[in-house]
Image (cartoon, rainbow, N blue to C red; front, side):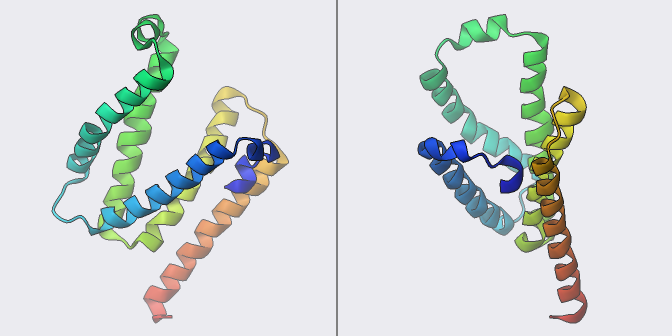
Length: 163
């Protein structure tokens, strides 16, 4: 994943880098806690996450983005489709899918699947948006896919043999 997205300029924005590291840590802890939740449906959990997050995100938008009403009133159909995609396709389907898997499999089996997100992002950026596919992106995707494959094979071997 770092190979796909690494840019040396990132070190000039150390605060942003720290936020990315902090979000990865929080996401990891959240995944472990999600695994421990029992008797809560996939979409029920998503609804509660949305209820808890909506006021925080609205507050952050008001603080950092300013004129929300004006932005919403002038947004194009393409921009609203982006909001719809983020709200439903990636959040609802993606997070519900991971939570569904977490209910049935160990974190060590499901976490590597999240490494596929940047690979899909690059794929769709190239195919839908006409972005330039670079050697670094190809190498990064191959490394991520190889990592997922190695973890999957190792998990199967552990299940089959106990080692």
